[in-house]
Amino acid sequence: MRNTNYTSEHFKRIERFLLEEFDIEVVYGHELSDAYYDSARIIEINNRQNIPSRLHSLLHEAGHASLRNEKRRVSFCTNFPFMRKHGSSKRGDKNHRVDVVREEVLAWERGQDIAMQLGIDIDQDLWSKHRKNSLITYMEWF
Image (tube, rainbow, N blue to C red; front, side, top):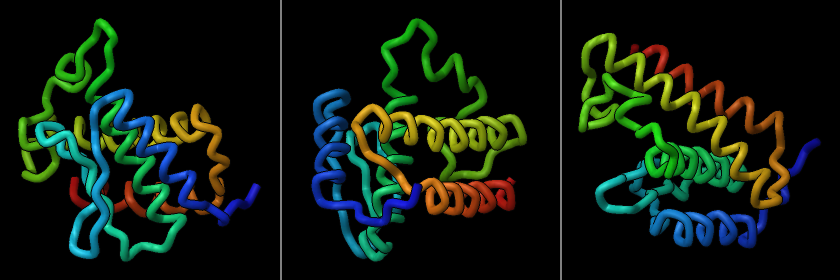
């Protein structure tokens, strides 16, 4: 199903979810990268993207936030034992890079779950293309 009619309400649902569940705020700006900063409790989204890409990026970063703040018995460090404190900002050894790619894939999956949980009908074709293009950059980085 194609849905390119994302509204400000879709963004507000995700922002509210992040604030209520994880105490994370979302900031938008032209010079910002799409990123989740765990220690600052902030998600940054570049608003030069078109609206569908912006929403997909927000959901993906929400996926990272969810993975890193789960209240399950198994911690993030246990699930990603080779992840360095700097996340993916520094290229570590192959073990680290595998964990970075694993987290990226899981964040896209978790983002899609969050959309479903919040009743946001995402455009599967656009979502798949965005996810593929993003993951390709990590494969090239590997």
